[in-house]
Image (cartoon, rainbow, N blue to C red; front, side, top):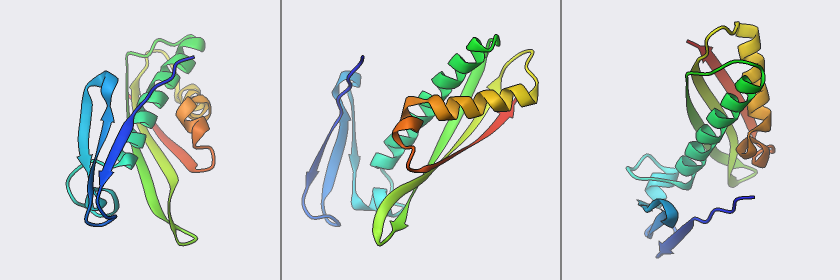
Amino acid sequence: MAKRTAGAVWEGSLKGGKGTLNVSRANFETPYSFGSRFEEAAGMSPEDLIGAAHAGCFSMAFAGVLEKAGFAPERIETTATVTLEPVDGAPTINKIHLDTKAKVPNIDDPEFQEAADNAKKTCPVSRLYKGAEITVTAVLQ
């Protein structure tokens, strides 16, 4: 099975420091800070990367579930909203909501919704975060 590596460097104090997140195999590096993570400052956060990972994983899982059910998806677009809020006094990722829109010929909405729910349950990232509340809103286009 695949193993992937990403890294981070943090310099300085929690609120005054700064850092970088990187995925070397993708030639990706981005700065992050306390402000970009816990406030509304510009920049990236680990939660942004978690959202991107979940959206990408779910979209692929959804395509697989649809194909297994005999439907050929033409396009799946997913946005993940990751909620980071205090739980028992500690910052916690406790919710992820997936908004997905898909163009899938010859499928009715009940079958589409069932496939979306199945993809939510079987996506490897969803399975990783099964302690969090994960919801999905699926729109058939």
